[in-house]
Length: 118
Image (cartoon, rainbow, N blue to C red; front, side, top):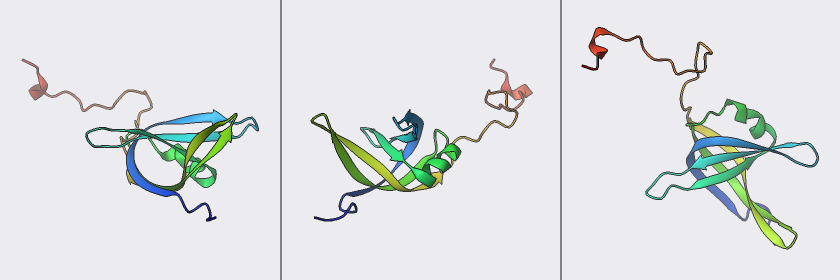
């Protein structure tokens, strides 16, 4: 048999959200939910662990991420559940800039005379 590098993947997608699940051992498991482009966009769940999970706090929805990883899975109660686990994540585009005034609202330019809707 081969090693865990037998089934690998690479791809790029737009980060939609990061889901957090807490394991029975109390460890957080982060899942990046990425959307692919094209005519039939897909939502792809990719788990991150260790240093990648630590870096995930800096990744914002809308960011474009290039990911390499490995495919795996496990058997639980007679069913096999697949896992896509990232081994490297590269930020291609950072996504929307963060608010600088902390009010939670998007920062809009001040209205000018030429902004009148009539």
